[in-house]
Amino acid sequence: MAGMAPTNRLAWTLGAALLGLGVALGAFGSHGLERIVPDAHLRDVWETGVRYHQLHGLAILVCGAHPAPPRGVVWLFVAGIALFSGSLYALSLTGIGVLGAITPLGGLCFLGAWGWLAVASWRAR
Image 1 (cartoon, one colour):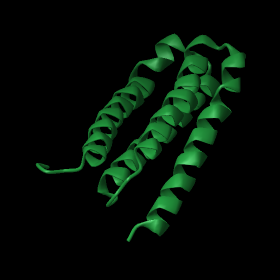
Image 2: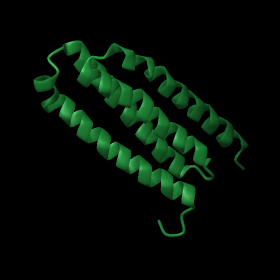
Image 3: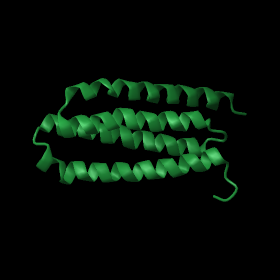
Image 4: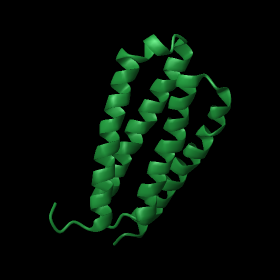
C-alpha cells in the first residue's frame, strides 16, 4: 500500500477498524447480549445496528478503492455508523426509546455519503 493516496489509506484503515469492531459487536450480540437484554425486540434492534455497521464499513473500503474518493464521503459514512448504529446499540442496552430519534440522523449521513460517492464516481475521469 506504499504510495497510496492519503484519503485511500484513511478509508482502508477506518473501514478495516470499523469492520473489526462490527464483528466484535455482532459476536457480542449473538453470544452475550441475551444475558443483559432479555427483550427479543431490543436484540433485533442490536442486530439491525450491526447489519448497517458492517454494510457501511464495507462502503468505506469501497471508498479506498475509488480513484479519488472525497474525504467527506468517508467521514459521512463514519458519522452514519456512529449515529445510526450507535443509537441502536444504546437503545438496545438501555431501552430508552428517545435514543431512536437519533437514528434517522445517521440514515441521512448514509444517504448523503452514497449520493456524494455516486456524483464523485460519475465525475471521475
